[in-house]
Amino acid sequence: MKAVVCRSPGELVLEDRPAPGSPPAGWALVAVSHVGICGTDYHIFEGKHPFLAYPRIMGHEVSGTVIETGEGVDLAIGEPVVINPYLSCGKCIACRHGKPNCCVKIEVLGVHRDGAMCERILVPAQNLYPANGLSLDAAAAVEFLAIGAHAVRRARADPGARALVIGAGPIGLGNAIFARIAGLDVTLLDMSSERLAFAENELGFSILDGSRGAVPDLVREATSGEGFDVVFDATGNTRSVQSAFAHVAHGGTLVLVSVVKDDIVFSDPEFHKREMTLVGSRNALRADFDHVAASIRNGAVPLAKLVTHRTTLADTPSDLARWAHEKSGLIKAVIEIG
Image (cartoon, rainbow, N blue to C red; front, side, top):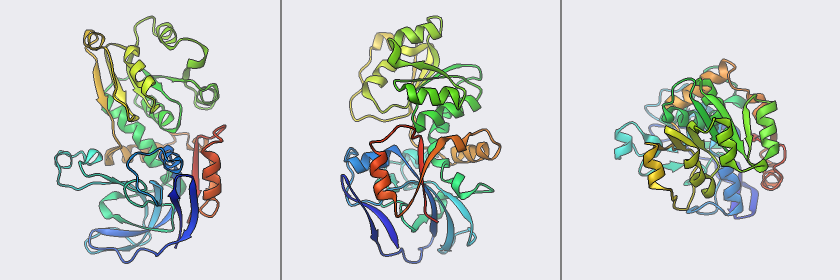
């Protein structure tokens, strides 16, 4: 089969790889249809992802069609599916408590093991969710949107709460969309005037442009000095995460959607006087995937506006390398494989 392989940082090639064999019990063989390109994929290409072993087939935002099943799998041949790329052990403390998204031994397709920038992939059947009327094109967007949907659910904010989403990239935009679906009053903060213009003009969000003033002043002005009830940081930037503590209202919540490699330092007196809640949000659960799929089906997600770039498997090596640097106008790129 054809596969796009990142042999080493900066080296992305189209290769012939052996196709997977018949699936073992509990697994299914999927013909890959569409793959979204994630910030993680760009980081792998650029050599910025920690603990990653090369060569690697990337790709974890995936839709496809079941073409063969192993023993005990209750999926029909020809079933269109969304792939949950978080492979869990099913036995650790997180899995036992219904949180396979933070499994102790988690393996993510395209990161810890080869992913879906290829024509065929073997996946545990428990990680395959029927598309239930979604097009395969739309189904490939479910995973990246589920990250934001999960973060919103983790926040447990009441409808009408003032929410600030920091970071207007794909994850932040998805976060903002599902915060709005949950009834929150959403504002987006970023340093990119271009991305904020998209969020305001195309998606209808209120914005704070961090490039046009001191962010603490902008937050105070937007909230009459009170801060936001819930703040989501989706930047992957250490300074942004540390600054976000100051944007939270007394009694409010800070949700860390992105992850950074550095230690996070904050003022304990400021944290305590607010009685702030600090929440980590990692990956997503089946309930989040289902919520996203339903929201796409009912028209609550402006998916056509989010997918701005497309390519084929053969053109992915050149296009992904270019998009890693040419970000203007880029929100979400999708590889059409099937």
